[in-house]
Image (tube, rainbow, N blue to C red; front, side, top):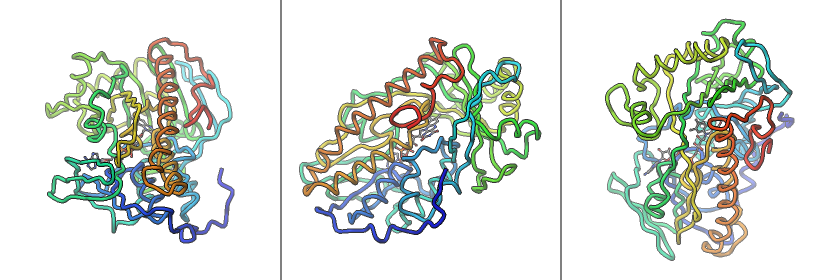
Length: 411
Ligand SMILES: Cc1cc2nc3c(=O)[nH]c(=O)nc-3n(C[C@H](O)[C@H](O)[C@H](O)COP(=O)(O)OP(=O)(O)OC[C@H]3O[C@@H](n4cnc5c(N)ncnc54)[C@H](O)[C@@H]3O)c2cc1C
């Protein structure tokens, strides 16, 4: 997929003096925040990232479909070859209940892990201006400046704040209190198993494809990703599953989100924390309803975890000198595998707007319309996929609408 053998570090030549120089604070140091940080830094702005976690982030989000926008920075501006941190599959395959193939066609995808991409993006930005242990608890956005206050008592004052603080964004909830997350009606059960812990014939049948099983009001997908240490060699990799299952909002969902220590979670339950009876029920369902090949992966998963699927839709992402990016703006269902790609695309468009305008307000005004439009379109598409799969049961194996992509299926 990548045909550029002599890759050089081209970032040095890209640093330049912008039309206007901004002091930028980025709140949230995940993939969206780091993409914006690298791009704005390269463009000559004075950028600091503030991340609430007290240590560098690890193993969040497990596998990701690795779309072009997500790896664009690494590909165009660093010496990292995205092929080295991802696994390429050649086919999309659907199984029948009895493990036979219902449909397959050639289609190349790259899969990586959140962890592998984060490490490379953090290397690209560096740690000097990456401030860990900075949880933003308050902020102000004014016509000519923005300030953030952190729980450790420090503050940031600058020209612009980029809020990349994810699905539970403090910024979104304060700036648009009506934009509450809307529950999609289902959760994603997820897990990873080292290929080395699965029988050879299982990894052989799963290793070259993304494999789906679609059945009543549910679907599961399985694909290979790099190992925790980053190896992409067959046999070293992980097999990653994402299984969408419906739960009613009242009672049913809150019971699922009560973790094994009795703590009520909101957005996700991390590995090792899901209540044992829910893990047992999920594995029993897998044995009873899924093709044996896929059920064997679910059964072998030691610490499954889950993420609740929410839609978040907004009409504005710029508020004086604060702008929202990635999941802090729109949270879209994962069916297009485009969440990190949208966050990165937001960052590219923001940096381009700064490049093309001689005022900060002009740049922010130019950033907003295309990214609000993209957010609405992507959310609409992923909602439709979710409805067809989890409610309407109209997904037939091989349906082109279900191909991953940021702007449309396949792109
Ligand atoms: C089941 C599932 C599967 C997915 N699969 C894919 C896929 O295949 N491909 C893909 O591209 N995307 C996928 N996604 C989506 C993807 O994970 C998100 O879209 C992406 O992580 C958003 O990046 P972000 O940087 O905007 O936010 P996040 O990754 O959520 O990061 C937000 C950051 O902000 C920090 N933060 C939060 N609050 C504060 C605060 N007050 N102060 C300071 N820091 C703060 C957090 O600690 C975190 O580091 C999937 C999501 C789910 C739920």
